Image (cartoon, rainbow, N blue to C red):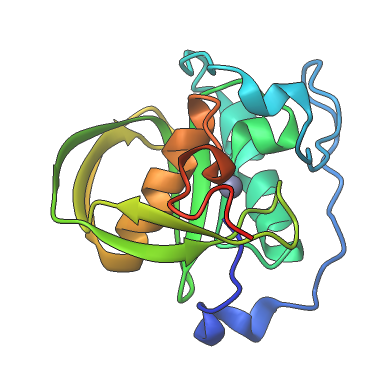
Length: 177
Ligand SMILES: [Zn+2]
């Protein structure tokens, strides 16, 4: 998810945008940002089943890419990886989660969202205002995040990516000028 109107406080690390290149481990190619209509953005991603250090490396590299692009959320298919994981950052706090599942949800509101894979576009999106998300951290430990407001919105946006769903699909203002 991109940050048009929010996350002002987290701007201190912007500008340090040089991408670190990790020494190759395994066969994973270098990540690059995927832009609509790249077909990888439409895939239903596979569950993460490898909780080795390679997963932690992937989270770290995705976090650098998210920061470099001034985003507040980045899902694996957006960098060409068809696995169920994402990173998100709001006001300096980072969440990295694999195999996220929304366990409960409540409330709703509408807000304009952007997406790093749809540069320059904004869509009004209905989201739940409170959600509880189960998943796993980089070491494979179970975790639960109960989040509300903007955190809830970002996490729903990123989980949509893992199912091949983009904001242009679910927008309230879809098709309007
Ligand atoms: Zn997005």
